[in-house]
Length: 447
Image (spheres, rainbow, N blue to C red):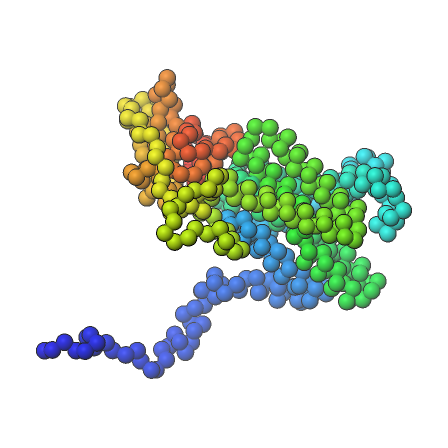
């Protein structure tokens, strides 16, 4: 038989709609919850019945979600959608009258009592140096301290909780700190705006005054609470990543954030707008630096606003100085020294350690190698596809370490809760309770 022109005959798809096409809810019901943003819709819909001024609440939450999404895209690190709700709720709890009064009394000591700072409408009558001093201690330091408390709590407590949900709240690097701090700032803004300022504005000037204030405070928060808190969150994440001088690092971020916050409150008109631009610029710079030093930068999905710096077709891929690996994925892997010869494993096996990765258990012994298939988020530095190797201490074979043979850094958490960066080529000592974060995947040592 001669070949049919156009290839073998294929049955045409039926013109009659199928059952699943006629009744889409039967086949797509489960997907609706996961893929159709069903839960956010339900939350916003129920709010329209349960809260006063429901329209303003819906607008406020949509603005908050949009603002967080901007920071999320800039950071380029994947997180669980519910993560920002935790610091937001913790911060809102700190603003309850009984708790907030403690902070007012504490920071009021620096200005001679909380009543020593008059209402904002009288600030123009106070000499600027005096006004700056009072706002710095009673507003800047106080509010940035309160917003940072949930971030610090999660940074220190989440790794010790041990539950699976707590892993998503751990802070191992500056990007984590920025995202968690952004959630805290949004909780502060929504509580302060929707429960204090907007109701007062509606009472004094009507609904239009309330919506104007809402748009100004929540919609412009990229230059306000988020900018200050995000910048401080960078320092908290940096302190967890580089623990030496941890509290000094955090204190530097606290002072910087408080100073910018104070300038914003103390100035008016054009100077205030300039402070907003500078505040956002500081946050943007912190995000860019956080992406650059991130151990998970090879999985970073942040994109450029424009492609002016994109490599032209046919040009060799030359990594720019200090560039992240996500920007030079076409570059050939760097040459690494040949892995040391395998040491006898009998002494190492005596330690009885096991490395658990994504539910898989690997007995640890000197010479044990992990490939890209074992830890799929890592990229090997060499052509052998080996991303990690277990080594033994030269003077004590019973002490095991894990050498980083990938192109990026890891974040290790020691049994005492200390966070350490493990750059390419370096080794982390393995002992029961040690965990290593490889981007989205974690390995845990048990004995």
